[in-house]
Image 1 (cartoon, rainbow, N blue to C red):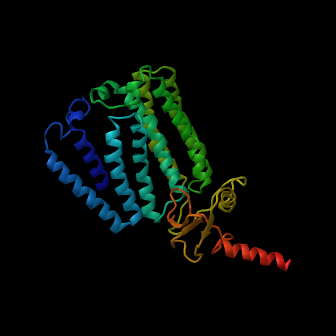
Image 2: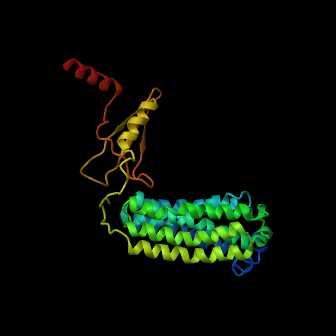
Image 3: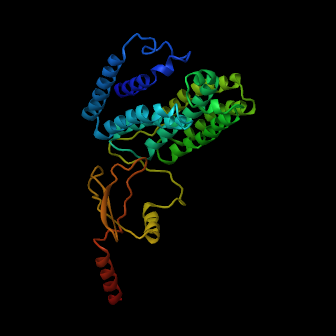
Length: 332
């Protein structure tokens, strides 16, 4: 909450003159001069430093890093983009998708595919929700000089199409949650049904763009998220700290080993892995060597997916590997 307060305060500090022009925002504390910018800046700094420090001390460095990164993404990237490009809406959706990752990282100490399912729900839900809102208040956003899709889209078809498209993207998230072992299979059905309900109003908005149809989509989105998250809680598969949840992935999906063999056959690099099997929380790294030298890249924790394991691909150097191959051939 402190990190969120910091980001929001920096946002409002940057937009005082724009908020003063808009009906929705002109009564905020800064444009209405109920507090001074200096006091707001001090509050933002206190919340930012305090919030990230608490996360680092009471949870872990990963959660604190995500919190600090989200403050930066919201205040330094999303906020100025609102006056520059319509892409700000999609960047803002990224900001909204990070808090579930923070919660998962705080509880588990790492990010894995289950965390990705939570983030996907928030990311794809935000777009129809906010695009409907942006169309309802497009005149107000124009007064505030914000570059929203609803402003450059005079007919509303592009705005509505984007909202509908992201409802479609949201449909398989329930199945993905089941596939990665986050929920049971009934959730996939319920999630698709609830999303179809919101998608119906997104289609109506697309068929006939208007303030009324946008408002119906907006209201359906307000119902969609709590219903979906409640169903996810009911159908969750309990997990213990440090426990790896078995996944329900289809047999045709390639393993990490197969993908890395394919990558090594295409790219001029040899990948080494030194992964200890006695500790699931031990640091993992990949060393990639090529003609220009060598470098090491930390991939712990790997964002959204578990760290790949390559048990049969360990090799100290190309020369040693080639020598071993020759020895094996001579033996045969």
